[in-house]
Image (tube, rainbow, N blue to C red; front, side):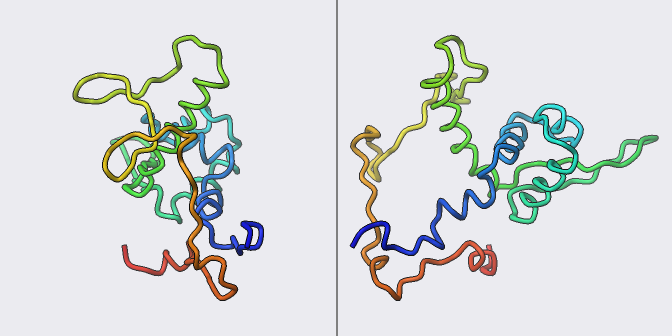
Length: 168
């Protein structure tokens, strides 16, 4: 059997790209990680139209990646602010890996816009593949193993929709 013979309808990559596989969602997550939370700030910083930003925020919120908080200062109109949920914070590594690749391979070799650092020591942090025993593995030494059951015509991977039904 070959990878092309496997039903990838319920692939983890597909499930993730359904939620964050577009430019706007990734930029929204980046900006939320950097501390922006107000709609107008997110719109200005990402460059997304009002309609696109509202739609992406709704999708991310419905998926449990964002928390919406309604805020009202005395004498001002109320507004909604957006924050990454615990589940949404899991996207930090994806954004970090994209930034690391972009700085390493796509931009000029100068000081990057942001650097990831260890809060305790201040040392730079780089994302890496790590084995179960804690040892780092070079990208060229990582092998992707397909679940042998996936080659069975009756195999059906769990979908992200089924996961939503399970209690968290």
